Image (cartoon, rainbow, N blue to C red; front, side, top):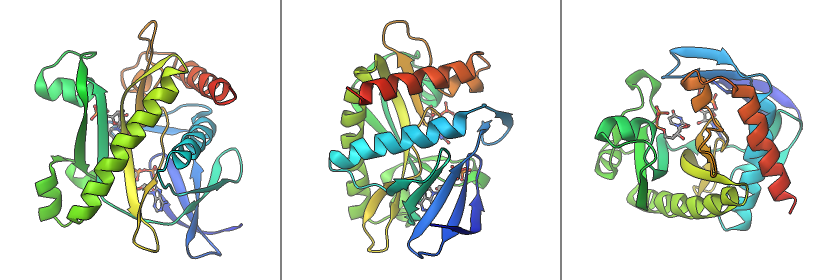
Length: 239
Ligand code: ADP
Ligand code: UDP
């Protein structure tokens, strides 16, 4: 499968058209951004880790009944995926208060919820990805009522599968962001990536952050944290 032309360059990945009109190649970069692109940097080796980890987790989700865009890994940084029309919603699932939830609602980081919280942001960089609810998403015609229901059901299933998987790695899944899209048949499938860039992952024993918050918050040991979470995921997957 050959890259024909670049169709998009985002903050973390490049997307290429292929000779199959239904397939794209995504190419993971080491570029890191935070705060809607205001903070920029490089995390050496991140692209390789995110590509591998995202594919491994999407493979696990497929086995658990969640359809994804994954077709096959092509190289260390490249993966063949089903082309989708992205639903412009960032779907955030939270098990523990952190980040913008803690800021917005004045809840200390680390407070666990009894039930997972599902939150939507409008995927729109120019507007700064504003928070919105289902009613807003329907008014803006970002998705149909059926699509929203499907997305919420998949999001909760993904949370259950990933929480269990990460627990086996000695890691607490605090929160994460998902993107869904419509495939060529109009079916909702999981797209984009699941990686330490898009999840908060805390060591279950020590609380140490093993995710992009080390970069966002200048905590140091960024590359080491990505390498550590990758090692744990690969070792656990092999068991
Ligand atoms: P951003 O656009 O936020 O800077 P990335 O650098 O990760 O993010 O760019 C990847 C882009 O590709 C994102 O906009 C994402 O919505 C989109 N995307 C992810 N998976 C697919 C797919 N299977 N088909 C089409 N677009 C996709
Ligand atoms: N997230 C993401 N992309 C975004 C915004 C958030 O991947 O554009 C992830 C983030 O890594 C975290 C979760 O979504 O795992 C919740 O993020 P939050 O809303 O707390 O925002 P932040 O504190 O990152 O601004």
